[in-house]
Length: 475
Image (cartoon, rainbow, N blue to C red; front, side, top):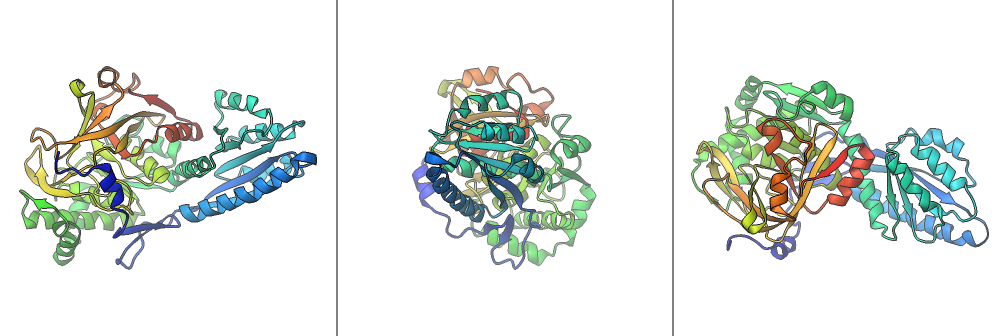
């Protein structure tokens, strides 16, 4: 469509004017004079170098260690929520002395420098992966023949990612993935009017046991009172600064309706601060006091998570992608068009910073919610040519995944307000394989998927290894 930006225009827009920056795991709202949410504890990752250090092997490991330490220091500064500890070289250090310290870390990075002519590095690595601490092995070419044994660890179900590569950028990516599980253990979600989705994801006890995430129940009455507690002046200022003055167009909603929606955002923000939460979902998001579409859009713009319709599976998915990749998710009610090999995504709430909190906002129009033709929702214009990942973490042990490329933006009145078409691998096969043969349940469980900018397929596979879940491709 002529109104859509292409990918080159979108990426060229830059990150100027972003309202949020991530510093040390803490989101600082520009101009607000406050920080929210509370800073997450830094993720502690143990680094360990393994390889022979005598004869011809002395110079290369020494040079590599210096380079790798510099790379890790830069990664820690960039990520802001990671602390690298350890750093011993085996030999001369003894693995039995180091092992107790490794087991106290959130993850471990093993750098296989050289294994020619000795079994000590391989034996040390085997002891480490047997601890169950999520691990990654970085092994460049000419590091010896030990690589032949590495894959058997993964086949045995060990939580170890294998990186036989010269691309040091893969170290950065796997470090980003290692943050997910420990950050989840520090996460609280406000759940308004109860969760929906798969049985496991709706169980407060199971979610806490398997992921460490706390689900905090909130009643509709609590949201009504929080809404009333927000001053009209503050709500009008929020509506004007973030929505009314920035919208490309306002079609149906009145100013008062938009102010009420902004008031709900401020109310939910206050509840999240009160309970130390970084995410929220509501099965009452289309009811009183206002529809949640603007609330969830703003939260997702800030690098937090706001998920509609009480969908707990999608809420957890969005948290995992936010912690791993720093991008928000778009919860979709998808449909197919096999004639154009397309999976079409649409819904009435969408982040306006789909590339992350520091990206420029996408163009948006303020509309009513399509089903009811009431309230306030968003029609966000997606960039053509953008690769996306479509995912859903289900039953607390499986991730459904597929990819596509945005090739069309529409505004069909039969669909929800934000609509975009993605070219997929095989729409007909995906149609018949929806759920990958592993997803059962009602409409909420079967229908929704979360869509994220970027192709994250390989990284999600690595994340599955680190966290112990299966990845199921739907294409």
